[in-house]
Image 1 (spheres, rainbow, N blue to C red):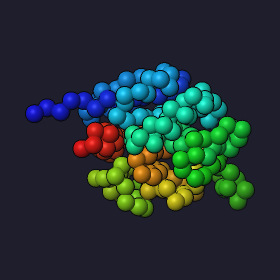
Image 2: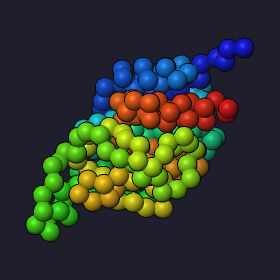
Image 3: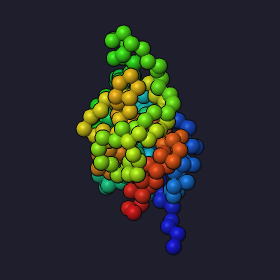
Image 4: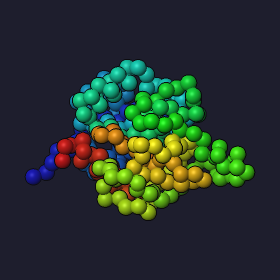
Amino acid sequence: MTRSAIPLALADYRAGNLASVARALTTVGADVRLARTAADLHGAAGIVVPGVGHFGATMALDDVWRDALREALTRGVPLLGICLGLQWLCEGSEEASGVPGLGVFPGVAAHMGRDDESAGRSIKVPHVGWNTLDIVAASWLLAGVETGATAYFTHSYAVPPGPATVATSTHGRRFTAAAESGHVAAVQFHPEKSGRVGLTILENFVRRAGGM
């Protein structure tokens, strides 16, 4: 018997190209619905918060959004953050210090070149391209992904490893590549651009949202 597609809400707060994320989620069994307002989250089995660019763009996720997301999390709805979405699920970012994150994960995103510049080294920022993942903790999101697998990154800020970190990567310094706490998970890279590894991760999320 064919399973029905899992209804997912993809948060559209004008901070990224949603089309590729939606296509990838559809490929792994999701019925993707764009959520342009917090009310559009209603009825979703899972929620995805993507994003690229400046952290200040997350100001669009105002108190109404925050309340709706926290209510969904209280009900056990799985949530996935992608790239800027991971940073927003943390406490915030030095890129826009006056804009708070949702605070699900501890930590603040910092500029990737800061430590290296102070030590007299230089690295290329933004960090763009394929990089390896180091799995550091058990994770339902990363099931089937092994240490050494590669994923596609594009970012200038990153969150230092912390208690929610389940995978790291290194570009100048080690940073959080994936974080997870209960039914909330996030990745700094772009799974929709990361080939089979990325599809495996999205499939794990859709499976979690579907209770499979």
